[in-house]
Structures are given as structure tokens and as C-alpha cells.
Amino acid sequence: MIKRDIPNSDLTLSVVGLGCWAIGGSMWGAQDDADSMQAIHAAVDAGVTWIDTAPIYGSGHSETIVGQAVQELPAERRPMIFTKFGLGDALAQHRKSATRAEILSECEASLRRLRCERIDLYQLHWPVEQPMEEIAGACAELLQAGKIAAVGVSNFSVAQLGAWQATGKPLHCLQAPYSLLRPAISVESTEEAEGQLPWCFANNLGCIAYSPLFRGMLFGTWNAEHTFAADDIRGQHRDYSGVRFQRHLVAIDELRILGAEHDLTVPQLAIGALLATPGLTACIVGARNARQGAALAELPAFLSQQQLTAVEDICARLRVVLAEMPAADAK
Image (cartoon, rainbow, N blue to C red; front, top):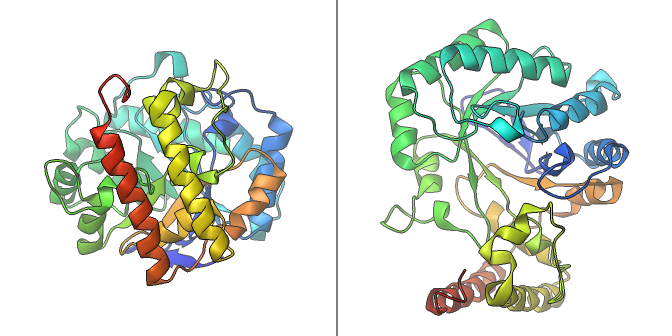
């Protein structure tokens, strides 16, 4: 597994990490805990060096399962653990808030569930109303106390990243949505795009992509008849139903044909293209069983410039079609 450093930290990451939202057992359909444990162990066996979770994933259940699975591994084989704060740990009553007291309390609760003495990357899950100075200051306290090893934020705009930087307190990494089908962070800032990735690259911050396979769509295994369980939130999103969903599948079929010409799968094209972007440190990919956990090792692929151009051509055509789609079909 290829590895990259998060700048200004001691963290060296495999370029693919294990995402544990589905392991929480809510919002992605039912999930078996034994399968989750096996997925974690298989991912580590495959060379994954870090796991990303959050208290809100299953109201603490994801963190609990991660803690149990990691404790079963010999100390020298345990992966780094990344988690988050700012939403609490009650899914039914979640709130966006991060006072100093809440940050310190959430950290202690996560440490207990994760059964560890230090969180390797502690991330603000979403922007909140509290002053940036208060949030950054509390994270600096946790760093000083050895409770965490690095500080991150998630879902921040360029302006919010700049506001944190202006506090003078440590910030090491951004986590943001980024995929072939959602590329906005990689584009220089405009009215339509945030441009966080170029900003991170210029300011020596790490950047981790979440949903790099577009919540499973870019695994390339779905067909036109694919449906989602009632408790799977993907079925409620406009990109996963109706005409818009079908048009995405057409583009993925084109990627499948392109990949077959080069002995590459759709997810290898999807992850390989992202990892070629300057400034991107790594990608988070979920796994729900041992087979999927082991498959994470196969995702990083080196793509030639010709292959990158072909991938972008497919995605560019898709964006044009989606933009021209009547409003009734775009919902």
C-alpha cells in the first residue's frame, strides 16, 4: 500500500483508509457486528494503516466496534484511529455545537469507546457557530495533553480554513467530499466551486477525501434495477433514483469499458484518478465484511495521463447532461 504524510504531523497514511459510517449500523441499512470486526481486521491485513469513524455513526456504536476490533490486534499491528466531534453521539438528537467544554467531554467519551489513550486525528465534523478561536484553542489543549496527535476539520470552506489558520492554532488536515462525480474541491475557487484542495496544497495541509466512490456507486456493481432499503439514506438522494441515477450508471458503464481496456476496475479508476490530484493525501473507503476489507488494498492504481484524460472526458460529459436535465428529472 502506498503511503503519504500529513504535513506538519507525525502521521503517515496508507493512501486508502477504512471508513466506518456503515459499521455504526444505521443510515446505511442493517449491519452485522461480526462482519464489521472481520472487515476491520481484513483491511489491516491488507495494509490499511488508519480507520475513520465518528461518535454520531450509530450513536457511538461505530466507535465501540472499532475499539473492540483494534484491541483484538497485537499492539504493533494496530491502525491509527481518526474520529470526530461537534455533532454529539445521539443520532436522534444530534446538534452542531463545539464549545470548549463539549469538545473536551466528547474527546473523553470517544477515548472510552475506542479503548485507546490517544486519538490520532481529531476532526470537527461540520462547521459550527462557536468562535473559531474557542474551537481551535480547545483542540490545542488536547494536543498539549497528549489526548490527540493531530487536528482536522471536515466540510470546511476555503474561508473557514483561512479563519482557523488565522487563530495561529495547529490545523493539520481537511476531510471533504471528493469523487469523480463530485469534484468541486479540486477546482480553483469560483462561484460554483470551493477549491479547498488547491488551498490545502498551497498552505501545506493534508486533505482526505470522503465518499470517493460516491457512497458505493463507483464500485461499479449496480444496475438499473438497483434499489435501496427503507433505512438506507442513499435512496433519498436525487443522484440515487430516477433519471439522474440512470444517467450516472451510463457513465459508470463507460468507465467499466475504459477500465477493461487497461485491466483496471471502475473503483481503481475512481481512486487512482483522485490520488493523481496534487495535494490529496488519501481516500476513505467503507467496507462491511472481510471480502470488502481485503479489497481495499487493490484500489490504489497509477493512471497514465492518457487514462486520466479519458476518465475526465467521461465525467465531463456526464456533468453536461446533468446540468441540462429538466428540473423535474434532477430531483
